[in-house]
Length: 180
Image 1 (cartoon, one colour):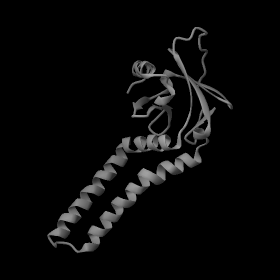
Image 2 (cartoon, one colour):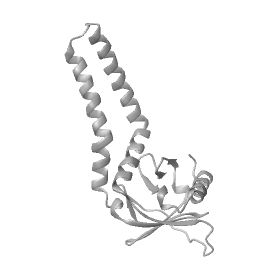
Image 3 (tube, one colour):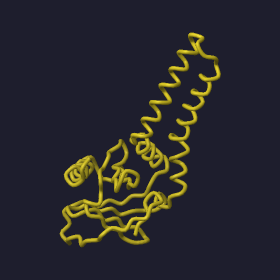
Image 4 (cartoon, one colour):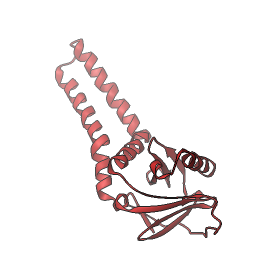
């Protein structure tokens, strides 16, 4: 069992072949990078994007109606406040609360990506996932996000790889093994 972002996962294990054809990296998490990665995840969610679009449309509409003196300042102020609160919640509060709740971000990992799957080792134990356990992956500027489902994922920092060649190899492996 492994805990990722506060969720517990039990996955079938399998044996890795001794002749490793994949790559192994070691990493810990940087708080600033984790917060950026969590923001990328949240802004990638359709419901958050739709919510931002709706609030922005109403805020712009209330600004236009206020400019033409069709409405009073109060509705304009309300939609501006809603937009500001939503922005603060998604950009700051939500990522920070997840970071503080999860012990995962304080741990050190050894991650092996191979033809058969992914093996994650910590001081608390080892977890192995076959590639079919991942539903998708996303790539951001600083992370590969490996998704188990829409809301559960594991972040692999790109700066843990030795060089650009290893990042490209990891990207290629993820592209062939996980549907994006």
